[in-house]
Image (cartoon, rainbow over all chains, first blue to last red; front, side):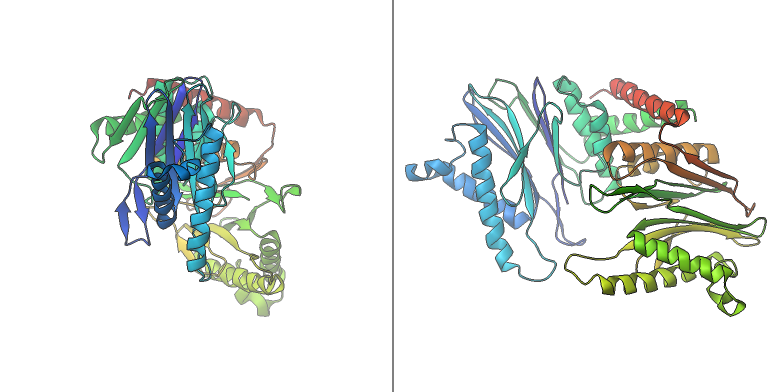
Length: 241
Length: 241
């Protein structure tokens, strides 16, 4: 499985993804699930992927081909799209097309090449937006009421987000919130694994502010994880019922 | 959906279940999912249910009929079983039988009358045991390494249990842990709802120690929920990364 989470805040966007991919319990690999595209100052687009790896890889490959391709393919290039809405539409159409073609090859019972993506970014002069694109190509968007979107193993890490994430949350707190949300998921579900990819995009900068890979033995992440465990246990002791 | 959790500790057993049942989003009802059977000092058995309501109700009805029935049905009565293992086997066999017969009536695609149960208890002179019985009638058992079992919407409430529940946990802390685990689930998932049924069985008492229904407006539960929110937010502020 996978866990990816994206936050859309007044201050910007924060994205975090794991890298574990498995085809069965005995076939586990590491694959990046966070892909960044930018023309600094002009536009920035981030994509995070969950689901069938052949679908997500082929979708990304086609998106890249359209970016690098000849001018007559420009209408399929996310780097030429007029707005983030159009970016989401291009990605949705590409994903749906790839999923359908893979689905047809996997005609066995119980099979299904589902995949989903989180798409975030901003074009100069436009709004910052955060979308969740489904297998079928349709999508939903984060709003003030629901400032975060998740794909993959989303349940373990949702309670902490429900409690602390608001549109006004600072980027530093948002970074902490997604890392703690991931920490809860890592502890409870083996199919989500280190290393992690973290990306921060400040509003109206139209460029990647911070992009970090957090490796398995990362001491800062380990210390945070331990501190959170201790803080939770202390908090638990203070509760009376 | 449903959320039920059972803890098997050195000090005894703690069980908590919600009561929300839904057949579609617009057909929501309240049904007890925790059923207690006791012959005080001799044996105590608790059953919690998740899944298809017609399956779980019919299974319970058949178990009750076997208890009240004529002596030639005694081998199917959980109140006559020689051990908790035999209790789990009787419940598993009954559940599998009912599920299969309902399944046959629901032959549509994507249908399926799945249900599962947590079975806990003790017979005088025997061990305290906690089982998770699957639709097919097979079961697993809680151990020292994994002292808790969950059915239904189990993911939201798992991180807190992973962090605080050990076989040595006191009954008071265990009660708190299951209530906080439920609180996280209630906040993140609409299909789990108040009131809650809480049951505590002390080791070797072979009787129900405490049985409480916590209603929707319960002030103590509300205060705990609020205190936990505040404690989590405070803990969040103390973490540095």
